[in-house]
Structure formats: C-alpha cells, structure tokens
Amino acid sequence: EIQLVESGGGLVQAGGSLRLSCAASGSTFDDYVIGWFRQVPGKEREGVACISSSDGGTYYADSVKGRFTISMDNAKRTVYLQINSLKPEDTAEYYCAAAGTEILMLRLWRLNRLRYDWWGQGTQVTVSS
Image (cartoon, rainbow, N blue to C red; front, side, top):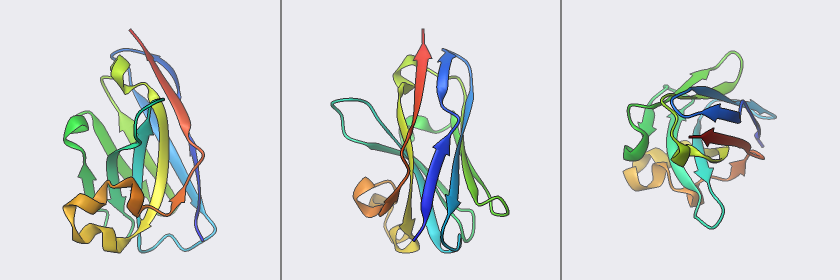
C-alpha cells in the first residue's frame, strides 16, 4: 500500500507561485497515477492534474491549464504541483492521491476522485488578494 504526504502549502499573495510536494512511501512507485485535488468547504473535491508514474504522461483540468504544472521525480518518489499566477479562487486544501493506471483508459476517470484509493492528509493553500 502506498502512503502519501503533502507539503508546500501556505499563504501567498495573488500573482505569486507555490510548489506543492507529494512524497510517496510504502510501495513501489511504479504503475500508479498520482493526482492532485483541491477542496473548499462546502464543495466537492476537484481534480486538477494527474501524472502517470510509469511514463510521465500528464493530464490537466481545463480550469488550470497554463498555470498548473505537475511533474515527478522518480528517484525521490515525489510528485510536484507548480502553481503560478495564483488567484484568490485557488484557495483550498490541496490533496494528492494515488490510483491504478487503469484510470487512464477513460478521460472521465483521470481526475475523478472516486477512482483514487489512497490519499494524503492535505496541505492548505491560501491566496490573499
């Protein structure tokens, strides 16, 4: 079983940048899809990006394309989410999660939170205007 720990959140001014990290342990890093999600109180958890640990393929939600970049360091077993040009509406708890590579078969599965089985504890990002 894979364990995930997020870090890198914080308070930042609008227009700034943050890099979130998701460190994986407990299982081989191969053959997982690692996704980043965010959630604000009262709303559903929203998938923003995912990456395949086997081939590095990436996928983004339309709402974050151009500002968010997901990447991976296999040697460190860590997945990153670079967020640029932060907006107040990016304020949320950010979670990373892992799923099997079968979710890549259908576009609708790739950022579907219900397809992910292992979750980190989250890291808060707050963007001030």
